[in-house]
Length: 70
Image (cartoon, rainbow, N blue to C red; front, side):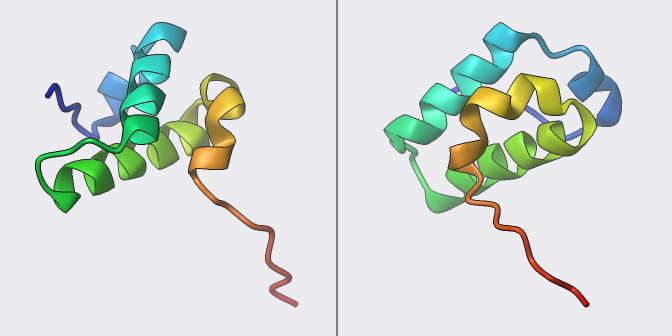
């Protein structure tokens, strides 16, 4: 299984195809250990903050909810 790292320069070079592959891995949830899945989830989350346009079709995988901090 191919894993990606969480570096900002790396995130800036990701393509829509890279993010689609990441999302497919998360949807399949077929990891050797729970940490691989968690790493992919954190990577998708980091991409969502830095390049939200790439994550828009897969935001449901992040299970983000709006919170009222007031």
